Length: 345
Length: 267
Image 1: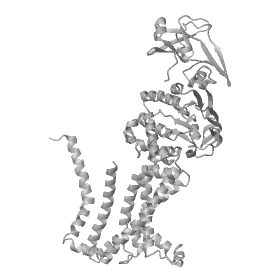
Image 2 (image 1 turned 45 degrees about the horizontal axis):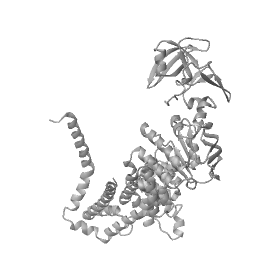
Image 3 (image 1 turned 90 degrees about the vertical axis):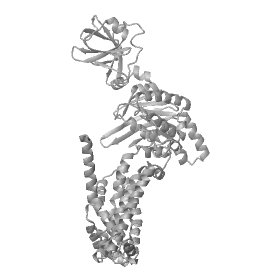
Image 4 (image 1 turned 180 degrees about the vertical axis):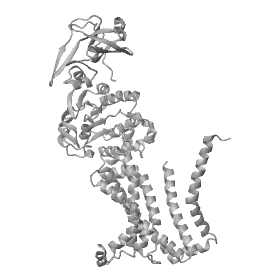
């Protein structure tokens, strides 16, 4: 059950948008397709919806082979980044569209539409036109429209991408709650790792038309399968062959055999979190994430020399990831450093 | 004292309006003035003569046939050009502009040759008992030819602008291609089509060059209003020529006005 895609390939001219992609989305789950632009995540979503034909591969929705079905018969709700509001229809008519196509009678349609408008908190605006709504309201209308026909699956293509930061955050929380109530299998596409980790139970990280790794947010963060996943899901420094998270960079004032010397180039205070940028002897630029308390204790200043000691580093030789505990024992007290996740840039 | 920017703004306005008045409005005003110089009687008599009424009727028939055909074809062609990209599109795109590029009289001549007794299609139609030249079918063909690009040209940019999101949303909501077209695409492009229809109508109303060749301009038979105007003018029957001109101008103005009223209602 749920959604499966097996061996999906799609080419646009010379561009391989999907390269032998297989994913499995459990029934009732909330999954994020995460990746940079051009990674194939939107193409994959559109292929599931039937808006894009695959060159080869299979799409199964709730146990049924949907590969050859047109979009109109797949029973999916689709939400577009730019809302795709029907501009010549009112909010009510937009939400009622799918029901009208299914020839519901008027009374039943009206009940259903108003129920959904209440759910998305637009009940008072049924008579407005999309041009009279804010971006956030338009997107909620689009969501109500998609949900009206009781789709088997809900697919959202960068649904919050066109909204400003505050509205985006609100809608995120709201989508998660909505999913808890409705339990319809949901996939949403995003390039924002923070958004993906905030909303989704399962993440699928894509790059250059391939699936790099899938799993829970913790899984991906703690056990990235490769360099790409490690750098995409969170921040990373490269030290020779190994990769270190900025919060795993310990800064000390006395060198030993495990430390590297670095020149403090810049200290950026981002609230409680401090970003300290270093240049190493070989010219490599790295940064460490410290807390305000740590910075005060170290009394670091720009232009001074300090020493960096990776607490935990990873290296990826070929395809098999290996993890090495860097330094002996972390010096910092347990309530410092590790607890904070780096914020998205 | 006016500031210099205000002065230059008024200067530009005066220049623009003056230019339009001199080139466009003065000749039209002259026609109206000349027509009603001796009262409404003479032009009215000329227009309501059997030949005048027939010309008016024939002109309206041209519009009634050519405009719907070019509208349906134009919308279909615009959909083909914008929504179904393939290699032939460049060719179609270029061919559609031909009526704009070629002088109407050349179009008339080419139709004359094609459907004449020695043309490719002439004998076939003659055998079937259908007369194309010097009769209504030929005039309709000429009218369709010269006014073909308008709906396509006005619809294509609107189709491009609305994009495919709304159509795709409709399909995920269960609408088939036909339902999507009627309920989503058509309402979204209706102003582009309406503008194209207005321009097509105006062109068909006023077409002279192509129609004059294929029709033979036979009094009371194959004469549209523009042809009637020319014949009367040549015969020094000025009240009739002016009267018919005014009717033509009023028809075109009505079309434009109807369009503007609809547009204002929409906004």
